[in-house]
Image (cartoon, rainbow, N blue to C red; front, side, top):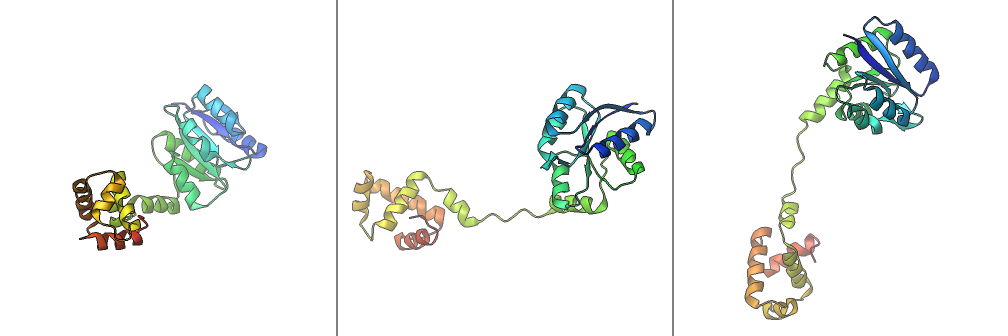
Length: 217
């Protein structure tokens, strides 16, 4: 089965070397396009729909991660990152965006060809540190939800308005607060009951302390 390959690199010498590598790498490799910048890469990928894109991580000073989604929009296209950058966070981001392989620009030519064949066959081509970084992100425990933030988020806009009146009311009676809000005193009490339950407070004093502490005034 022929593997149709597109090369993307802004260094002419590197691009020339990759062209020679693909052209002499075996009868199953077919070089269909070469690009030197992001716009050209996106256009040529849409036109030729290659099986594999060997993509330089840095294109003229900008990250090629920005064009990964567009390259992968072609069904059947897989991307192998060529990188001189060993920053694990950047390489991990590339894989999470859909790149199936990462090869150092210092790697032996046999490794580049092996990555092309492996990725075309549906496998990943990642070195051990990068694989460990990816696994670490996947199994990292989710941050604990802030219970207070959840309680506050459960308040309705009207309930937050009532809390604001309580804080700013300087001990005003329910009757006075209800008049300010243009609601009945009974409706105000219903709001307060709901607020007490949501914020786990017992009375207006505790509500005042809670609201002041969490900036609900």
